[in-house]
Image 1 (cartoon, rainbow, N blue to C red):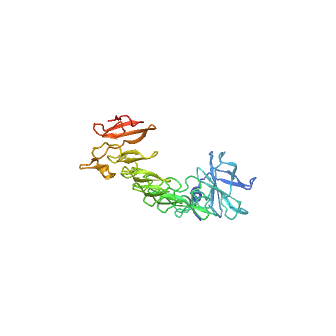
Image 2 (image 1 turned 90 degrees about the horizontal axis):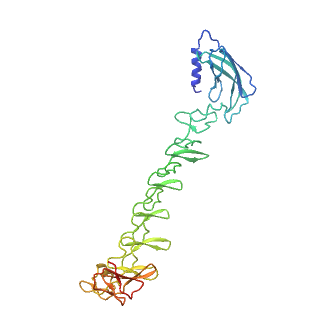
Image 3 (image 1 turned 90 degrees about the vertical axis):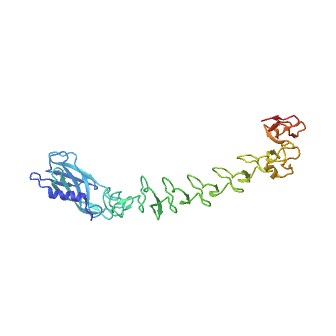
Length: 390
């Protein structure tokens, strides 16, 4: 049986209590209810709080239990001190059990004792004396938590122990994991470990997948819950990190959506990076809309493409991009536009906008070289001379 601080205190009382003038004694009387002890005492020191009471001799649970102290001693005595007790859950108290009530004189430690009996039985202990956190287990085990391997007392929330039923369930870095009919605290948040139920669910570069922390953010891995969803040059597609920004790949969610000379194009339900800025290619969303020397041209409703075959008068020098585009536009050495072109047509405020470059718009709706106008524009009609927009 475990030793108790209260038992040690009583032992000190029997050894130290040697007052020549005090002769304390107590009597335990029958109470009006079976869960009470009624104690009367006399011969104690004449102080307001003259004695401290306890009961001893229980065969299960802690061997002793504090009963308290009379609150109003008179002339070294007290009457009608009633101690009401309760049993722990699961106790089957059916058999009388002899016990001893001990009263210790508070100033001198002189003891007094009296015998009585209480009902007792299997799995019995007094409520509040065992089974709670920081206490030794009751005969039927801990009321909360489980028995610590280091202290032998009831504990919870540490690794391998039952989760706490109030407050924080587990210590930091641990989470409840179901094992049979109970939940035990186990490590969480690391690779291959369960998700933590408080704080950060998973460590950095890990994410939750079906309740387990797994690597994230790299190609072919799931998207991270926090921080960078995917690493550089990767984007999320159906919850997985995939390459982005190159031709035929989805657009990137951060940084440049597409690499140079590529632009986002809607294809069905997805948007992918496709070539832009070249002859008959869509305009680039970033940087120069068209390659140098090519200009936007409306080809059908709301369909702007880059073209080399509009906007120039004959004799305008060709850029490398214009030469590369072919289309029979450039000739000679150094290359120049061989024949006058029609203005490039776009829209502005619902009207057609006609433009010529390094040329002006002639009355016959032809681009004509011969002035210093970098761009000539006419809104709504091509039959009037364009306005220089330098």
